[in-house]
Length: 254
Image 1 (cartoon, rainbow, N blue to C red):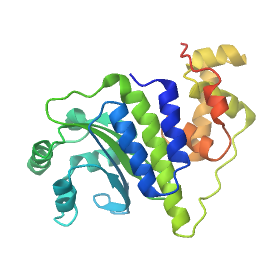
Image 2 (spheres, rainbow, N blue to C red):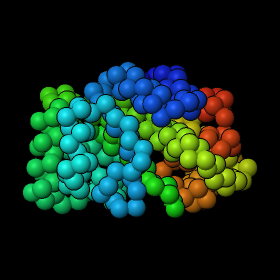
Image 3 (cartoon, helix red, strand yellow):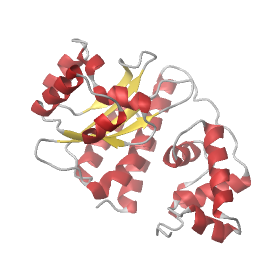
């Protein structure tokens, strides 16, 4: 099981990584620490079934080298599922997100043969920009480490945002300035980042759980993100939250 401190160590490392290669190295270390076998981070371009300019992975070389040139990536149901889901999913649940054709099933059979048997994928959606995904993958015969999935989701969102911003900087573009959250939205977000439920956050702030939910939903709308994890990550990068805010109380209540 990954401790909160372990996650923060990797998050800090990706946030300060000077290059995309360094982000990949951090992800590789985290993959092993969280008891996965492989990882992949990919940014998509406008065409939903094509991989974009950022691609970090330690998938087997023979799989990666044949994937894009052959056009087989168009048959990848994981990429297609990311277009339909805003929440993380396991590959064994793909058929609950979308119908799988014979080509999709053949693709996954070939992936298993290449040592990519089961995965946990975090879709990333960035309004007006290239979205993408981060996957943590298991070899044949190994089960996903369920205790590590929350840590994997948090790190995935942070690593993708770090890679996206670094790519923009390398191209001579500054990341767009984020929206400003209200003080009440930030109060609720700090407690959400510490793992508090809406009800517990409301008790601490003198609000109802429903009101806390409304503040957080409004903050998500301002940032154009789908999940609270993505909201926390974007607010951290924009300086509206600090690690001290998030780590002020790592106990999970409610």
